[in-house]
Amino acid sequence: MAIKLDQAYWDERYQHGYTGWDIGHVADPLKAYFDQLTNKDLSILIPGGGNSYEAIYLMEHGFTNVTIIDISTVVTERLQLKHAHWLDKGLRIICSDFFALDEQFDRVIEQTFFCALSPELREAYAKKMASILHPEGKLVGLWFDRDFEGGPPFGGHASEYQALFSRYFQQVQFTPCINSIQPRSGTEIFGIISKPF
Image 1: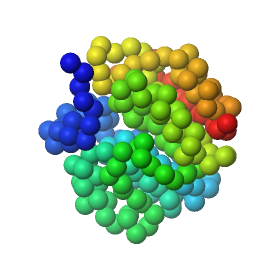
Image 2: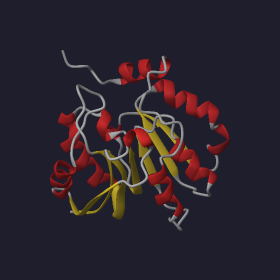
Image 3: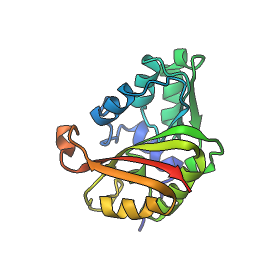
Image 4: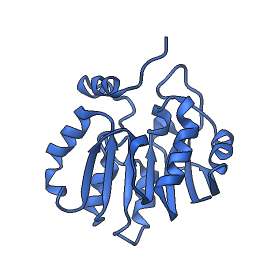
């Protein structure tokens, strides 16, 4: 029987600390990307944000418009309490379904959200990303380039992602990650996806 990946499922995972995907800090490939951004006023979305080390790193480095969205009330309430001092400085924390979001952003950051979704939602993910990015916006982040037994996480490969995103974006670039954490070495790719049709 398929697992129902709903709010209750993710609440339970966070409640009991079943968060094996959480590496405890900003992934080095994302940190390197953030460090070369010069416009600190970019509107940045982190979907399926979880503990959102990326968002806090951005806030600590002067970014002024960062939004986290996650379906789990447990993790979003924790973030609201833990990072309350950032909430009047440009950080927003939304507890909602990503697919219900009706805004646009300059950057969307992918970090273990895509692989947490049921594969049957991947087409909807790509289509939604195209709709929530500004014309010059970019979807940037990390994707697994490997298979998994069961899921989540759900695996996949660069060629599949290339075909998927090319249906909605004019520019799709995936490159092997050279600075992944050791357990993920050789199994991650870095993607920069832009120019929605």
